[in-house]
Structures are given as C-alpha cells and as structure tokens.
Image (cartoon, rainbow, N blue to C red):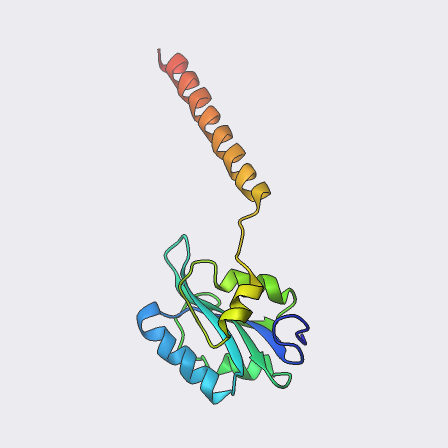
Length: 153
C-alpha cells in the first residue's frame, strides 16, 4: 500500500521471517540490500513459544512482487510452518509501532520520524480479557479441586 503517513509516496510492506536472532540480522540486511529497500524498521522478537524472528516494515520506491521476495528466503529461513510472511502493509503506523514494541529494533528512519510514529500500547481490552480469563481458570480449578475431594472422600 502506498504510504501517506510515515514515508509518503513509498510503498510499505509487512515482513516477518523466522530466523535466529544472532545470525538472522545479517541475512535480513543482505535481503534488504539486494531488493533496494529504501527505509525499514526491523524488530527482533521471540514469541511466547520461543520462536525467534524479525518483524519488519519495509518501504520501497515501487510496488513489489511479494512472491519473488519471499522465494529469496527458501533455504535461508527456519523450517517452521510459515517461515516468511510478506504482504502489503495496511495500517502502516500501527505496524511501525508494533515492530518497535520490544525496543530491540534497527532502523534507518530519523529520530524525528521514530518519535512521530509513537509507542505501541497494549490494548486495555486485551489486558482485561486476559485478567478475566485467568480469574475464571482459577475459579474452575477450585471447583474441580472441591469436586475431586468430594468424589474421593
């Protein structure tokens, strides 16, 4: 999608690749150089399940053939179920904030551009939902525990 907010006139893409954090950045930089990425934010992340990956937003001068770019990673990315994802970015500012959420990112944007993007905020609704789910699970555990005590008493 053509960016109208962060880098007006350039095309923004969401990019995620499953690679180890220690060696992966070298490959990501090689990829960005080969395909002439104009600007980028690449965040290093480890998922809750321990999967290491880079979550990025990439800006190009022209529209890209995402299949061609994904295919470059064949044999270079981890062998996870979907090791590479690249699509046209839709909510560009949100994606940019998301890639920087862990604080472990690299970029060639200016400090002013980074400040104008803002910081990622965890949605309160998600936090409330998680709290309610945890309370429900604890209540269920107590109910199950009491039922088991009665059954085996």
